[in-house]
Length: 428
Image (tube, rainbow, N blue to C red; front, side, top):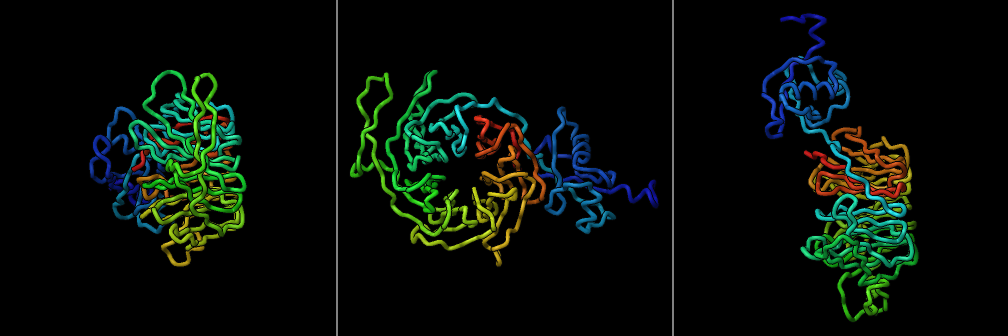
């Protein structure tokens, strides 16, 4: 065979395998490739085997780990012999293939919820919530807050004709809105809250809805976490709220709700809450901790400390058991509470250059999550490699919020006053 001796060390026999369907399935046969080939080179080789009309970007795994250096360096680092035929799995690269038209707001976009497949919900420093059905198309404006909105959540987005929305604000209140999505027309509909939730003694920082129920959870700068009922109970106190000018309608009635339960334990601002299961809530705080709360008893059953003030927490990954958090340094940390010695993160991602504002797990993947940062970047991560899969840098200022939308898009907002949508992301 050619390439005996010194030359033999410069080539490797590999077999490319994939779980992808045609036309992305290459012939399963051994090929000889240069040992110093990088991911881009591997992608070119697979594209030549596939004979696609339009080249496709791929990522590559050996023994379940993504290759992020030359093949030769990877094999050396992992102690894998290059003398046998290597099996390399390829997947479609996780990166946006399209940037949608930005949707301009009147002030900083501080909150976004992409959990509805039909709409995007945003909160803004102008005190208004907005519902978008497509880039640039705002269908509803949610009004009433007297301070900047810090967090938003769809409480129920599955209805054919209406959705329920919760907003949290620096004015110390939460508001609940019922939005008639069957309304049509060219103009934007303005909506007032049917219920105002009062009880926090400082700015409300985060709101999240129970997945299958009628409750929302909020956290605040007053160091507490509150649970609220979202129904329209007539037994609760009612207050008057004026309709918008020009519609010649009488005053509407707004209900006021009080917290059903308060969780106490954090000693600084509770920056973020998530509600992954019926009986479990997680919170992050500026007191450097992530806590897990048992909803029926109100007791914290887990404390994770990292030595940094935390802005965001997310729960996902394998078995929806991994906990990710980020805050006042550029490091995104991931813990696995199922493992002994859970005080130490099992993963740390450190490619950002400023504070992390948001982290979100992908709903249908064990491996993928995103982080947004004051450095103006959104990074897409895979637990199988320490480097970001892709960096979205379309914002011109701090990124304050981000979420997945419809499984293949990232929606984000920031100090450039824009909602941006990065779409056509392939999550294997």
